[in-house]
Image (tube, rainbow, N blue to C red; front, side, top):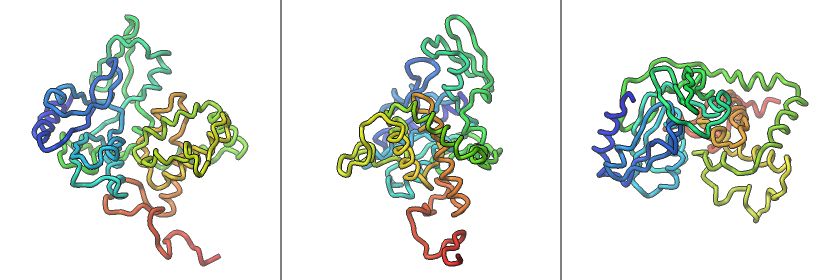
Amino acid sequence: MQYLNELKEKIKENLPELDMVVGWEQGFDSLRASPLFMRTEDDVDKMIWGPLCVHNLATYLPSLKGKKVGVVVKGCDSRSVIQLLQEKLIKRDDIMVFGLPCTGVVSLRKIQDNLGSLDYIESTEVDGDSLNITVDGTNHAFKLEDVAANKCSRCQYHNALLSDVFIGDPITEEAEDEYTDVDEFEDMSLEDRMAFWVSNMSRCVSCYACRNACPMCVCRDHCVAQSRDPHWITQEDTVQNKWFFQMIHSMHLAGRCTECGECERACPVGLPLLLLKRKMNKEIKELFAYKAGTLIDAKTPLLSFKVEEDNINERGW
């Protein structure tokens, strides 16, 4: 793939100074990529790059605190690195960021909706703006834009916003994100909105994959979902418990969520979890003119304090 050889060379060049570099390799079949932890040059040779590299590798950085770690990032991934740095959850001196320009990644869920099953993938080929997948001897051709993750159609950050090594030519085109999906949902009646979430939460299996995949969800050892002192959530399989957890999760991420979509990607039953996070971010943007993970020296609004907020008239009621 484009830029891959140059990226490998740069990683090998810097690997002696690092404990490891986190990238992607082919997973258990040709369609899926998996995180790759590179410690030797042989490991680097396994690395892949392209629209199949969907994971946000910044998720691993807090757990590798204290090590010298390199990480390969797309534009949306780099926002998570910046947000982690803002909150001092990782140290700048401990990480080396390898940035790449990204035109989008695929949604395995969209591909599965078209194919019916992803159990037996025989071969996968990315050719320009096309994706060819062979299943049971039959080739299926897709345009990448038709099976791209929803976040990619509104991406404003195709290039890594933070990088020590940037590979490739920066992409200058940017989409607009007016939160139209949130607006459309808000246009629904309260009853329809509640019915929508009750229906979705009834499908939740409480696996917490959304939490585990989130790069900003770093308090897993003290998560309200599993805490017994205090005891916030029971083990009952109820919509109320599941909805309670998702609301707490969304509030904890208000102003911190970089909208990488890992929560939604990791969900085994396809819940539209990013809609909750984007609703919070829309409010944060309107109230505080802030977008998570875009400015390394900024302060997250709900993790800081101002006596008078510019867009909140507390004293003029």
